[in-house]
Image 1 (cartoon, rainbow, N blue to C red):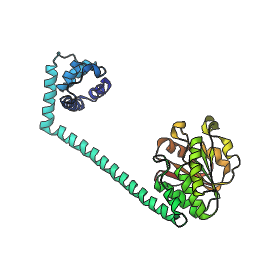
Image 2: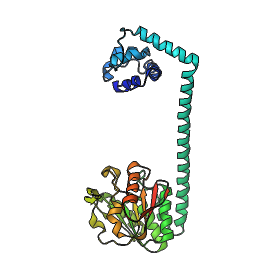
Image 3: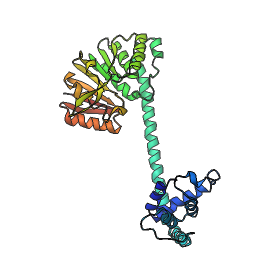
Image 4: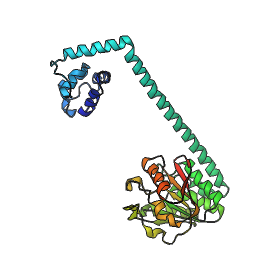
Length: 330
């Protein structure tokens, strides 16, 4: 009920203003809010509330000082009759009813479609979770099966995305895997590498505390082919400007990367926080290497993919699996 919101209603026009004011007037009549103190409504006065309660669009426009509004009497009698007359004409002609029904149906249709898509995504992720466990179940002990519980819920790859990464490791047998950001994916890649019997994973992590946690879990499962390295954020020059990224020294001894999984640093680190990964490691990626970027549905990650494809030589698009973008290096 701030003045800015009310101005937006008035600026939307008489029809929209009238309908929305009518809804506000009904809200003010609710016993839970009808006794609100105008002093607590940030700029609203008792006079404002009175014209809202009367659905007096023109009267409110005048009180708010909207350009083009004409002075009305204190009670806004003429304005109220104009508003009521317009409403009667709209109802009689059916225009208001048709508009409202069409708008509500459109909103309902979009809501149902969004719910359908989310249900399909949840079902696909659940199916991928079981298939992913089946792919490695034959080589996992009961203890490691119990360790499947996600390390960092809400931050790790989806089940579909993780299944794609595990499938790639099982089929392509990468010798060197580099991961930006550690967590549940680190455990799954380590299990897949143990299953194929070859290869190593270097996972970069900017949090020293998280490095210790993930390393401890890796040791419990005996995943000796995985190393989580502490790589604090440092300025790096990329595309003509500096931005924070993982310390370059963390990968000084790594060459011929076969698979690069980019799931960090966090987006709050900087704008296009994950963009430096491919430009910074381009010379370490062997021909035919695969690059995977998580969260490619987000605005910054979409822009990152576009910039990689346009600016980094040899990067080509392959496919998208849930929120995971898959690319190749030629």
